[in-house]
Amino acid sequence: MATINDLREERLNKLNKLRSFSVDPFPAKVERDHTILEAISNFEELQSAAVSIAIAGRLLAIRGHGGAQFLDLFDGSASIQLHLKEDVVGAESFSLFESTIDIGDFISVRGKLFTTKRGEKTIEVSAWSIISKTLRPLPEKYHGLKDEEARLRLRYLDLLQSEDDREIFRKKARFWEVARTFMKERGFIEVETPTLELTTGGAEARPFATHHHDYDMNVYLRISVGELWQKRLMAAGFPKTFEVGRVYRNEGSSAEHLQEFTNLEFYWAYANYEDGMALVEELYRNLAREVFGTTKFEAKGHVFDLGAPWPRLDFREEVLRQTGVDVLETDVSAIQRRLKELGVSHQGDTQERLTDTLWKHCRKQIAGPAFLVHLPKLIAPLAKTHDTNPLLTQSFKPLFAGSEMGNGYSELNDPIDQRLRFEEQERLLKAGDEEAMMPDWDFVEMLEYGMPPTCGFGFGERVFATLAGRTIRDCQLFPLVKPRSVED
Image (cartoon, rainbow, N blue to C red; front, side):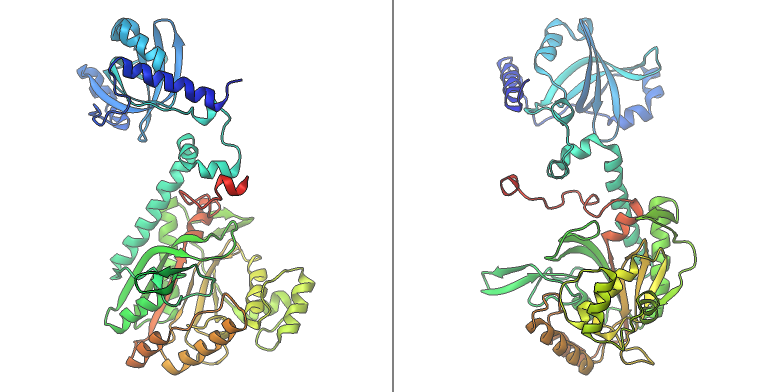
């Protein structure tokens, strides 16, 4: 059985043969006046006009023998069948094709359109040229891409072989396009904020750290899409802003978590969390209809309809109902005992982390859609205090398919309260909680100059992946994978 090195050597010989005929295997100029999709869409018109067209693409199949071959050509827009005949292109050209061209090569062809007896739309090739010679066979000709890591490492081949996967990324592009349009139509201006920060504000997560050599200082990759920066813009007089950008969290991987992903965050001056919930519900329904053509989905064992009413679930009441624990009237040891009884593992032993773990157990049971509201102040350090209970916040999280699908709240704009909460987060950091929020004292200074009442909200790729019925890793074009040397 031929090895990959044998097959590569064979193709190198073919490449050299092309060069011996003064043929450049990698020309810069390509003869092409139609995409394949254009040729198919205008097939009858082009056929009746008997015009010769030029197309280009990758060969995905070669069939036939003797003096005629049928080929399948794909250019990213569509595929079409080619008919290559010795008595049409000439004996020398046909022989060169047979002896030098492989499945996977890129070629350009010219010819007229016709329909075969079986009704297949086809191009009768009158001339061909190589435009990129491949040195490795496509997976289906060798061993296939069955291993998950290999499939993601060689993502370009994985996508080449799967129209369904390519369609996922067309939908993902549409998803963010629809989201941007939705925000802009409602008066939000798109902004860009720093991805390198002195402190990582806006979320609770372990950051990636690096060093800025020019300034000789340590910096971090952001863990939110500029939350504390966008709130500075509220103080600067921008009433509505949003940003779509990459976020980095140095944490574990799962079907819903990656270290690098895309989020959208918006900030809305003179609005509160009630206004935010109304806007988010409208946004999610719009995304579902415009991108997927429905509001009804099935994911992770749950069936839900984003077009149905969205009830509100009080954090304290829901955890109490499911676990018997009142998160406002408990302590660390009591939560630890209950988590052990539930068979739930946890990392970190602060009350903040344990409360969050208890909730994560509960959320898996909720099909949604719903809004989780009034998170404890302990786990929402940037949210405004609830009107009637100082231990709770004016906060909300969309829920469906057993997962949180975003995070929003009436933003805390009391500088005294914010300073106290940052001091508590600093205490947690010093105690070893790597996911506690880094204090940003410059942000507190900004609040002392004044920020209007504001609603902020953020969501990310988890929403798209869930609606698409995929893992978040499957919905990234090039997710991070270990290099071969590390795995070996």
